Length: 279
Ligand code: AMP
Image (cartoon, rainbow, N blue to C red; front, side, top):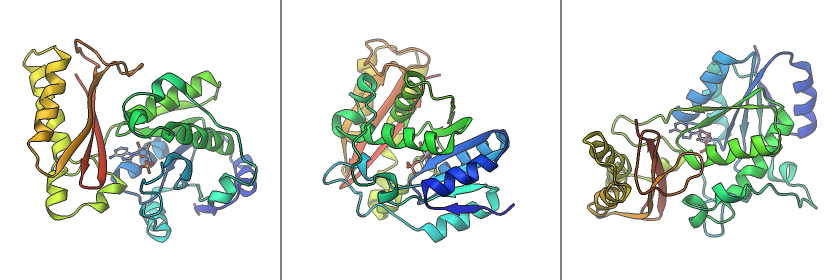
């Protein structure tokens, strides 16, 4: 099967209509890595057709964030996709996605507010809007997202439900480097000492999980453990640490099975996130 590379909404609609059966969509911002590939492989295994979008979505970046320097290498991405049996890759331009006069936004209110939303105020409005547009353009039966972006999953599930998108949201486990660092396109910003320091997110989550496994149920104690682990790493600064209810993202006093531990950490100018569900 020949992968079709498409650029316009019109071409995507035309090709989509010709595909019978279920379509699985994996939305990405490109700079593909093992995390993305796991979503695509899962879609390939579960659906008749697979669509991938590659779009660095300007509306989910804040002023002063890394939109302009975000890694972009379409040739490399297409080479990586070649062996995966993808039917359609859609690579819209910003003008195709947001033509002149664009003024319609999707705001998922409460679950967008804490954690990432508190540090990146318009981020989830941009995410929800672009994902709604991707759902309308691809009309997927299933859409594949990574647990790596835990709050994004909560926001997208809420949006799909609230707006009656006929799509099943499939959440795939976080894929990690051998030392525990969650794969991320932004890891390419890290080298040397910063790359080594970046394992602090996984170490902080692991330290809190160890306490949970040993019987600790006080959420404040687990948050303090994550903070202390990050504080021990000279190159790292925590934006937040959280032990929250996994569907509402409300901070808890007591943790239990299913609680979402998450954190955001800056290593110099590079901002990383990670999370773990207590089991
Ligand atoms: P991005 O290109 O960063 O917007 O990510 C596209 C999709 O890949 C999102 O659903 C992410 O949650 C998912 N993803 C990113 N990194 C990972 C990872 N390390 N493991 C699993 N999924 C990931």
